[in-house]
Image 1 (spheres, rainbow, N blue to C red):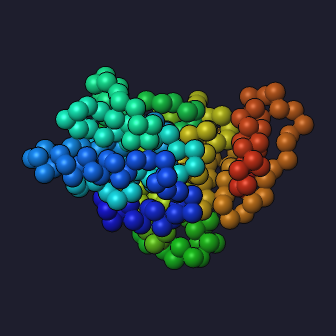
Image 2: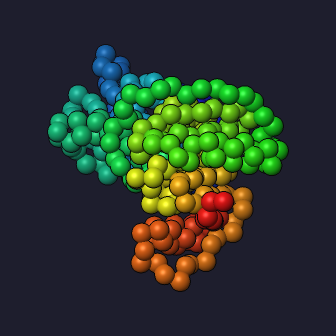
Image 3: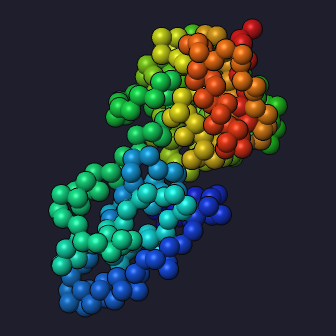
Length: 285
């Protein structure tokens, strides 16, 4: 856990800030020291809201206080994670300093490792991850050869565009190429390969005809941003689309947005412009 947290932290270090001025870490540490000298083992629970980023997912969990990661109290801008100190006296929120009851503690525990939006989804379904086929390792390429990356993603898209379920092709930062298998409206590369593997990766996936919105879902966009992907592509029966942290080109709004094909397309254009990322969509050949 410590090694994974360190590597992920290096990727998004600039966005993670310490709340040391607002968190009573010194007071909590004194309580921890006191209770441990008395033969007790207090615990720390860090839980997410179910829609967290990769860094928060990596550090979320329940720990004995003397074994908790050094960054257990840290939060980035707009972070909604909670940190709870469990002692003989009760359960205390480390940030607000308020005492909580047992019911609230169990709610926080239930959120751990429950980031349901960390998936690629055709229509933002928010179900639990079902049993599905494991990913397959295909080959290793030079990840710096962006033309080779694009060609492999495009070849995969041509193969899966007409499938009735979702699949994804993942090319990791070290050039490993994996094929992931999902269900009717979702595929789960982060669950299949792990958070560290897909940070900074290039990924493509298909949206089946009966569930597509003819562009990315908000879950797709969420995964793109929170795993700091280089490129995320998608393809359905009519369109191919791409969001990118490298090519910042964004499509113009279509003349008519009140259509089935353009409503979500316009929403992604708006989000791309506000977030400073690239987004394009084009008709299939």
